[in-house]
Length: 357
Image: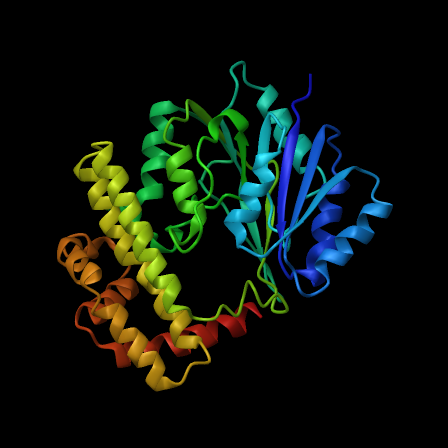
């Protein structure tokens, strides 16, 4: 019997991409689907479009219109009445390949035991090019519980040793999308972003701790929208609040490590995460539309934050494992040279945007 797969799609102001997203699910070759779409109080017409789309859809779609309360709440709303044996999350501005779910379910049937989690890569869709992000070097991997713990779960906490050679992969495994979850695996809901930012990471740390087995496959890939016209994906506004919420996430993970007696290795990995996350915040700050004086003010607040200063002390011996360019950035951070950091990252960000479009 084919397992029921519930696809949960939160939607908020993604009108230019919504049809492409919905078409990619409705037109799946796999038949046993439950499609759940949650309009999180959109103000750009996305909600009305969903109602019209229902009239002509060849598949049944469950649509809910709720008051805007964030991505986590929308996903939790979908989870509350999802009936699937497996759960997939898809953001309303991303899309799937038309054979994606069928190919993934075929992989599940290749194994005698029930698979708890299936992971697949994603393709970043820019205006000028598409860039595939493989999660692993191999095209297909089976993980038992110990292998999953060592090769995936620990990396969710943070990188360590040779893993630091690829710091740009800090969150490559932490997203809720790009995965097929066994429904039985999900014991914890998404926390709101003002409790833990980014929300996906805490969700996965809480729910993937007891994975018995998992599979990585490249039979499909999710298309992750980074198009220039998608303001929600590309031109992120700097939010100091998000940085503070990220601190809360670090504290949440620290509590998990302490309460579950996970030990020194996990603490070391969390120190790495605490430090490496700073690059993204400082880059978004540097290329934002804020005035230069505001960038310096917020940058100083991040650089001089006690949680970072304490982590730098613990991270010192690990820094040599980073690429040279990253070592330079963290050297400037440690020396609290906010001016040079902001100027350097401003030009780096502009060059990268020009290349990607």
